[in-house]
Length: 262
Image 1: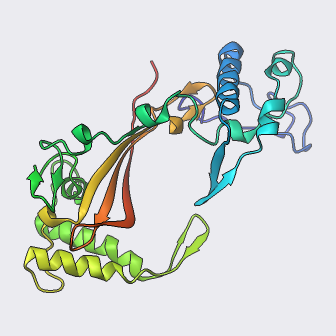
Image 2 (image 1 turned 30 degrees about the vertical axis):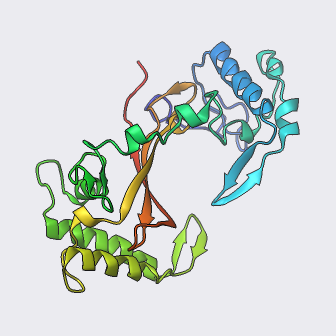
């Protein structure tokens, strides 16, 4: 997909393809080479400004080969030569100079905004706020904006989601073992909701606290150089114990931002 239109890479000697069956797939496209090279140069500069560059392979952190990035020369591209663009130039968000301030928002004035968030331990804030765990789950459990899920439907939706931890899962090709201790969180939630096992969970007592809002501009849809969307917005929640201590358990809600470049 380029600029929201489907294009086909050919190896049949037609269109942009020179030789049929040579396993070199080609297509015609319009591209502003100056802007594209500027993008590559900026990414290269920001990568080289870091002492250590890391990326992720599935869920494992790995070091990036900085020498490959250093040796990349965009001038060869403008001179019409065939060159290999290092994948690591695109593996991490490095376009913004201060990632802690511009990509991840953790300021308490935001993540503890009493009109939009709720602290289930201190009972501070708005339990129906726009950024609360319960509200976001209700939206996902709803068929559409005109058919908002009932309390029972939301509770069932959340239970089904949490119960996935009780069985082994395969995520992105990686096998993850069952985590049956999730039942402790469910039981504590039921107790605070004053319901018997299997009863309707009260979203007011959802044991999840908002800890960050993330702007993932680095995930914007890349169609050539003309980006077709604005990436993702994410809400990050931390699971809490029955005594309101933080657990090593975070939940991330990911939303595509369908704002196109004009």
